[in-house]
Length: 507
Image (cartoon, rainbow, N blue to C red; front, side, top):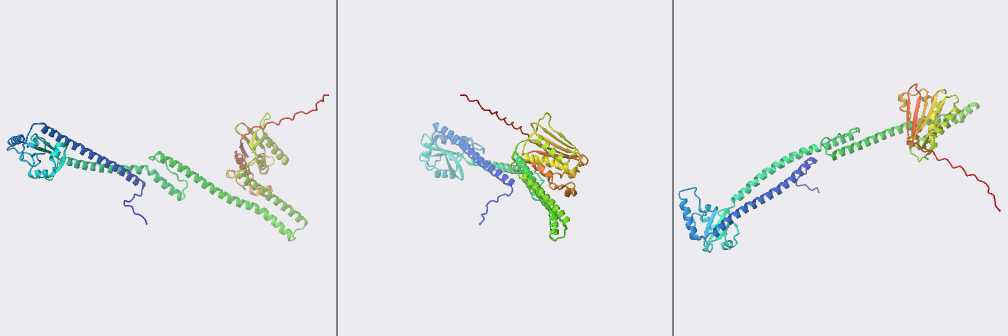
């Protein structure tokens, strides 16, 4: 069963913040108002008590009896006769109440007309002051209610044993406290209203970046992966840090999704190309075998069919080997990194190419003075890189096209440049030069036996060696490949074997 809240909770964050601010300030104002009322009540009450004690000391210190007070009251009555605004005897003592009691605490007729106390007040005082003698001995002020009015009174004993009750109204104090509560309530409500408006405005301004984040997240959820969170002008440092972190995360997500889509598309394209490359030789082998089984070939045709079957099998074997090599390189295998003499690799590959194409002109630009350039890598993989590059030159350029191989080495890197003066590539073909199964001239594939994996293997092998590979080509300007590999220190020379000899035996 769901429990209902007595006070509904606001749904928005800015409303909750505003409500919390107003609630906290309201509690503070309430505590402050309570303290100020108590302090005001205490201060004004203390002032009344001090006034009564001063008057009490004046009466008790003067040698006045009930008879003397009667004479004074008679004199005061004569002085105020015919004057409505004249001072009563009680006002002369700065009191609101001045009543004389006999020695037993009973009502007395002394100063009855000029004391400011009617018969109802006197009757109520007799009831309220149960022990006036005790109050006279203690001298403490007490609160009494007479004729519907609250008084603060003190009792003073005169020299003849009679007692005087002096009092001041508490209505002025209560009126002051009432006005103070009214003004504090008005000021508090106004302050809370201003606080609510200011807090709501500030919260809307400060939390606007969060609304922008929500809009951005909604747009991304709908498929707009390029959407980013704008920099907040009014946000705090935490909000700006959150925006920066979310933008970085969104960038990584977009990159990951883009790479995933690209990899998926590349895989589909790769499977289609691999199936196509394998289907053609398989169809040829299957066709020749069917003709052979049905006896439709004579002796010469059988020999030619077997030759073609062997050629297609060799082609499929080469394709499978290249696919395995490319897959192994992409899995980042643990290569045997050793210092490898790149100049030696280039010389061997150039010699192999000269044996295959004796008429091709070659230019080797190697470090002078017999210096060598050592790269940190796997020798077999580096040989395959150089071999694939020269095989690409041998297959796709005329036999008389110039080949330039340059090797440079320093403390920062080993650089290899292989350039030919062949026909070059169009820009759209150059952008796909490292793609799998890409051939600028697909019609020449049956003649060359290439599957379009050579440059893809070169790129994968260079990346496995933590290097870089770039190309520069244009129609009629040849094809240049530049490779950068991490350098390595030359290996230490092997120690020469020590000369051995037979010693002479001494007898």
